Image 1 (tube, helix red, strand yellow):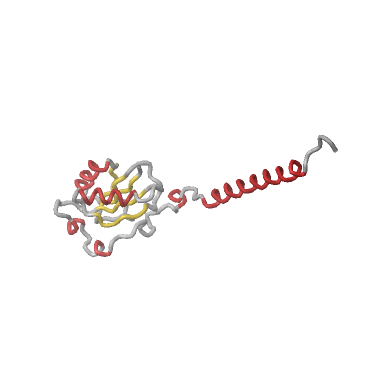
Image 2 (spheres, rainbow, N blue to C red):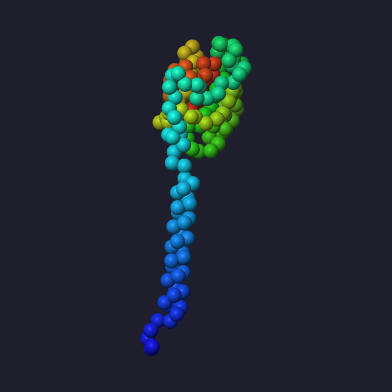
Length: 159
């Protein structure tokens, strides 16, 4: 039949288009399946009677007093926690604080309620150390609830 489509035009081109479309849809579906919607927000909230949301170093437990953990500058140690999904943020801040002669007791990820800004949780009797840390990190000061360390500052970074 003159003017009709060839086999290539009738079968091969549509088959390639369908195969390419299915491949793209598969890749998009795979990426969406592996996407973590917001692991910080998905964590359960911490109640006052719950276990601490971060582990406390065993050496800090027996002392019962933040004064026993003071560094050479008279400051209590810092626990640095990443409050974002940005990998390595707590490690980077820990290195900066160490270079500024702070004792970093621990680094990790924040598992409490999502925070909107960098926050420094401080034991009730350690406001001066918290204020000094805030001048270096720009964090907002909040008195530490009972489920957070009472022997160290807890810095949750949101950048």
